Image 1 (cartoon, rainbow, N blue to C red):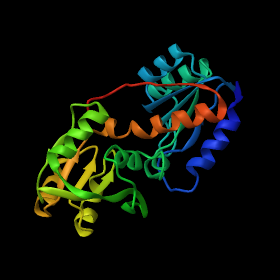
Image 2: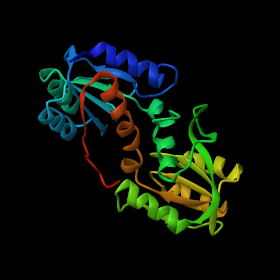
Image 3: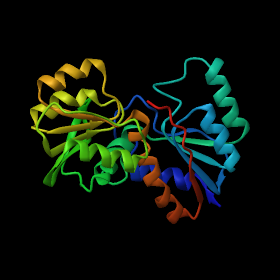
Length: 252
């Protein structure tokens, strides 16, 4: 077993969670057991995830989407039920939102590029003054359907949808996981051929089309499984803990 605070301190520093403005209260959101032997990893903090983490015997749960966004106004209803479950089971809850999007090694966006055998080259995707995505380039241009198929296979999802609005051969790629449509105007301005995100919303459609920017929507959930998965071996090797990824897809 390892002391909880050792893990928290390592994550706080490795992910630099306190350095970025974020509505999410990143870091240890709910305090549980002091000693940790098993850690569960998941995208969302929700009852389904909590129950599966308890079944695994987890002492800590690390998620991308935590429970506290700005603050807690009332402890009642769903908030009360979720907090009660965590506290009664002494399950530590650690959240890393934007810090786990933008991290250059284990971040969702860096990991999305790695699925395509690309490395982050240029910070991209300005969000509240913070670049949370990356741009990279293929050495040899690839057709959009091939890029989409690679993501289908490696993300293990049928959700991936491709919108071919621009050039047939893709070279310059920009990525912002999750709900990343805010990055579309910037992608057009920076000469990106393909923008990869999680959700492609109605409001974004005509902007991308008129800007001749092809888009792949890989699913909000699927595009953000990568960061927590990449953290798993790091904590397992550093602290000797047992780990598990809890898959709880939404189809969105």
